[in-house]
Length: 469
Image (cartoon, rainbow, N blue to C red):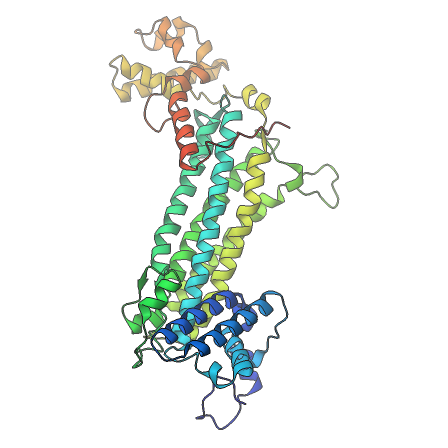
């Protein structure tokens, strides 16, 4: 018997090479649960509008559920000649139910079926990635209590700039991942559009109830145009773009912690369980997990580029090119998911080297900007204050001392208005305590932000973890 995808118009069997070239079962088998769910909802709608009898619908639903269990348990044979997961499931349904099974595809095409299944899969993937991002944010927030009094140098141009509290660093990543979550949720609204019932390209003359199917599958809205519905892959590109930014943010974090864990920085000890060794140098403790997170960002970026090129110039409506959208999205999701699953325990279990950080904290004149703003508070114009403090830093560098150790006479030689009160803002800890602006590293502002994040992430019932090892 011919496969469901080949009508009587074909007088010959397909060339075996064509079967091998066009198959997608090797990757779209991942849509099996969504295909079963979509087909059940479609059959329920067909029964509601009178195209199927109640008994036929029940036979179809029971058999689809049975097929779904067999696939999930690895007891279902996959064949290249059946092309894709949709044909596998339909062919098995027909083999088991005969003409009753042949009725399932009434009022739909593989075009709207594939788009619906893919949207369901992407919707689930977004929810899973969002949950992992939330866990990663929680891991950073959990660090804030134990690291509350640690001051770190903040960098611009990879040069020491100003002092910040360690929790201020941790919350910076929470903000980045919050934007990632917002992008995912915003995109999810457009993913959550039902294409089923738009059929191949123009709709159907049969009295299908698309709203009924959408409600059964949890879609928020219907695709309004059948031409657009079968050709639209914006949701896949948009999701991959959001995944790319997540990967970029993870890469930034990974690079920073790779640097911080070097002997040259000495800020951070990574958990040994997430490091590897060298095949020849026995002393090596390599940050391979972080390096792979950084490296795999390239894969996700590449998938986004692939999708952008894939849809470039495609005429309306469906074209077989769109079969190639799934490997890119599947791997982008898998890659980001695995990177997040590694990042969460690394964040939780790494330890700051407090002694090393404190020993070098006064290097780099991190309090220079605070001193400049002290002068501005004394009515010195900003550009003048900037120049004066630069002169003081030059003198301190020549004497190899921090600003706080410059004698008052030396300071007055640069600016006669200095008095003993200047020492109230000098030194890294005093500089941190001098901040007042919203969003700054001021201790009270950071504490407020930590509390707000705990509420935002529903962490009030959680006990902050003590990661001291």
